[in-house]
Length: 313
Length: 313
Image 1: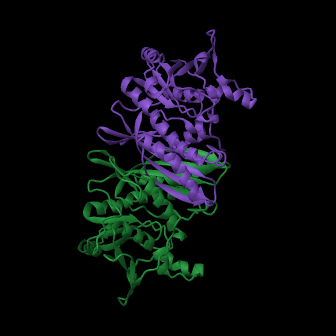
Image 2 (image 1 turned 120 degrees about the vertical axis):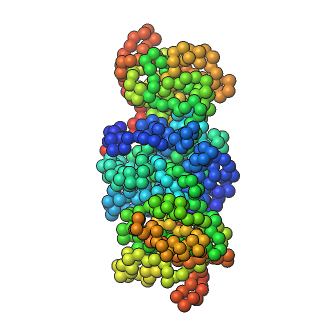
Image 3 (image 1 turned 180 degrees about the vertical axis):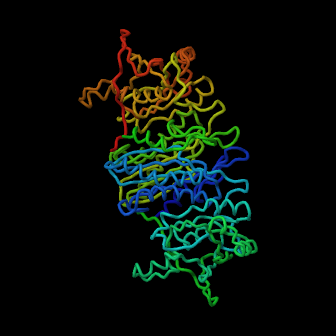
């Protein structure tokens, strides 16, 4: 299981020391490259059959997603993208045509987010398609967001809506780079991450890094219309709320912000007129470890864990 | 074919502009992150069946190689490693054990070259093993080596010996990071690259970027003892010299240096007492485009092209 392997790996890695400020464990690493300049670096590898199915999805959307998930990691740290590196492992047959389509989906997003492709590695092999992207960003003057730093009493804020990403959002989402930069400039964000593996699971990870727990107001979770559409399509027992809590690939921001600041943000909705994105308070961080659900009647109970975890033996 | 695809891709990429100093086309990209600080970034993806054969090679040697080829690219630019990122695509069965062995080979090299692993992505899938490594380095005070800049009249200098890497060197080579840093500090290097796809092919690439040609003194090519051993093993027609010119995976430095400076370096062999590495002059850059061979009798003829090129349709 990935969590166990990562624990083993963390034990083998040397202690983080300058010029490394943040190593393995957050959404990206942070490297000091001058007294007043820090580089944020993240890397994600997407592969056929795990993150997409070649043949079911347009390669342009796959290429776009491979870059977008990395930009989302930079957003999680409030870093401004500056450059990206794209490595492709292509099936031998039709590899060149496929590579062009991947880039045709990826390059417009790179341009939109000022994240030019400046390097990479292109190879063919006998295996399925795999795409490895590394993105570099620059930490802003207000510093980076980390997963640690949430305090009991902080509001849990999220951008956008959750659930049902399998219908389209997993490919078409907008990395919350601009929203994160705005928040870094205008608000004191205590902790943040992007939600890639499901709201409940990722919230539990942020709590673990911050040494606290969280209460979710189930009635306040912003559920996407796709999560609501999924129920009749799938004929499964998952409710729209369960989709919103557990589906993954939402790529929204999860934020810990002082309760008073959060109330003001939710009242003013400053991101809506510019970026079309709403902020919602979905609960609060608490001292007691664990995730708790508070229903409409105020009843508090432990929240079941779902979400996506990479598994291997 | 990779060359054609790269030409297409280069045409689609935006012009390089600040903070990017060097984009696609050299051994690594160069990014300005402060007035006096530049980051060098390279990424290489290795895969089962192309760069190694899992089952024939110890996974520790494969892990080491995945990092070493990236450090060699930093050496090609005379950059001091500062951090590395390792992404793994693991076969589902036995993935954790394999990942541990890969890291057991990789981590000692990371420690030796002060290139700690500070991030990455670990996934399992139904395909073969693939490893993507990104390495970051810091440009030294004397700047970076580029492939462009060789001038007619410059000596062609190389570190070490060539050919026969298939026997062991492809896994056990030492990235020439320290040698490159020494040369950057003590010599004016006009152009450089690391030899990964064969001496002749990579020399032709350096010539193309520098807008010149080169004459090789065939009698002076340092041929490794492994290249000499290969001939009876393989029962093929390749001579040891042909192995040295075309085999690839030597990961030695190829340098363009002013003729007088080069003569002094060859006479003094400053790298030998410290790093155990000899410098050899194997020819000279010329104004006329193309690669030329000069035999022991002084006869000049066009050099046949060999070397390794990634192919896909």
